[in-house]
Length: 518
Image 1 (cartoon, rainbow, N blue to C red):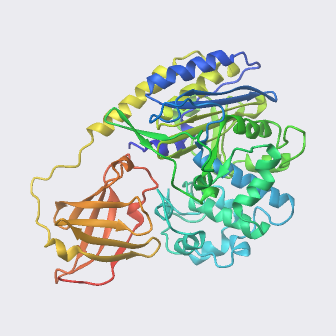
Image 2 (tube, helix red, strand yellow):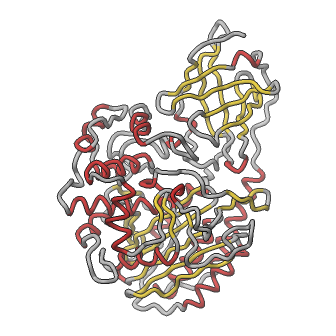
Image 3 (tube, rainbow, N blue to C red):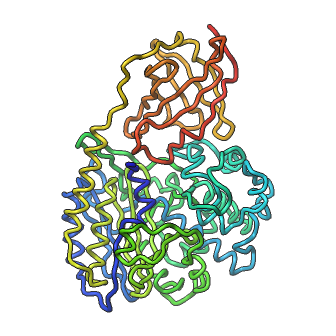
């Protein structure tokens, strides 16, 4: 199955192949050369790379341009959306509350958010803070993400209310399924336990002690006078299209942090220093770091990974973790529309690297990371840029060639006005379908970006073409029609297999609130 680029980023644990070695001789010049090569090989406007080793910043630099609209260069101070890297900050913030004895990792969520509810009462009663941070709640991959993705007018209270109706995919702690809304919930736990907003607590407890003065929580909070901000791009039909960083707003606990190479260097240095900042003061303890870097939710090891020396892999608290050839690897990726990022930490070598990009070619981040690690870990020399760019081009070609199934016989639809009406999903809310210029139009009322036109496909099934094609998220909508030819509801499903998993249309159960035959 072909996965979306963000999906691939979220599951990068199956991509990187490491080995061990006693020394690091890779020069900053070689990393620079790889980054420059990646720009052209992957058609990427801009990159930022930061690497630390033995308590020193060995590279913090920008490459290419931050905005194809004006050609301004990326620097070490250029802000990028680092998306799910935020999850590690959320885990670290909770760790400080554990250290203050304001909560415990295994506290029940309802101890801190009494109104918290999931659709299964038993899971509601048992779900812990540790479960929130380790993707083992039982909710499916990206379940409920349409409440925040790609943008929303919902508040945290609205999200919590909606969670009570999101369907489960498995039982509690049965399997791994990446879920953003559990981190939104974790952010609310931080607010309740600390008596401060999530943003204020993370800023006061983590960002300020680390000296991360440029880092912003919530993309809408980037100061208007700050212009050194990367603008995302999406490649479509061999052309790059701008996609500005102006969504996800205030759900920072799951993935709405913006940072730059210079600031992120301080975060990486703290990671290899077991939670201490540049002055030696503890921001979070070594015990807390061990808790965050311990596997909570195991993941399977493929045959190819086992051949390369992978003994285990899994998810800890806000971090992926694995062991290859006896060396621990801690890592995470981040992906939003038009931007990707990747951090890899080798604790036993006191080394960490982060790559940020304003394009969605994840293979470029893999290639730069691998080239940096080859010398550190004495890996066999490989042309990672060539290998990964070939995979990327194959993926992009497959996307361009994708076509919906052709039908030999197409059944007629009802008169279009019969589909018009207000529909409601228990966890998302209202979805309106109306008429404009003799065409059906759909409006996800809480999601400004999700407005589009319905094209007939077959019978009572239509295809939603979003007004913003860069979402790459066309969806089937299949209307339910009763014996009286009354439309009673609808289900939806993404058309293409590469659709970003956060467009979880398949979890919707749309009920028509009223039937209007006119």
